[in-house]
Length: 123
Image 1: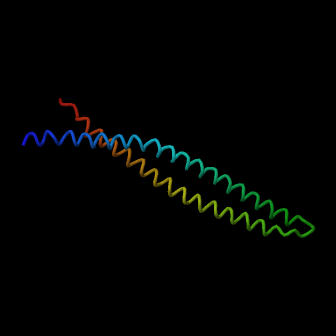
Image 2: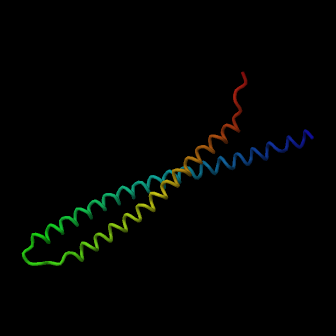
Image 3: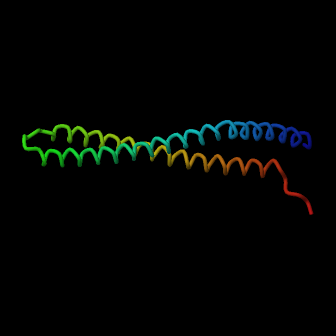
């Protein structure tokens, strides 16, 4: 019976080592992806702001023109682009939140695995 319990810990430690290895493998990729998503979201906010400014300028120009120029078509196109950017931004935000939760879970699991592998010091 003692032999059966002696066999279990090496299997368990192999699984623990594999799990920890996988955690170390995925953690940098998750962090890099999170950074890139944040960067894309920031640039989309800037693009959206520029679209808003351009739209305001086009409205102002159309009001100042003596000759009527139909800029509404272009303003609508800009607004459609802005809407699409907002939709993509929302999708990216959801993905970033998922990545954040995944990163948190990886960190918790890594800490748990280390706690199991490193027994507390005996006093």
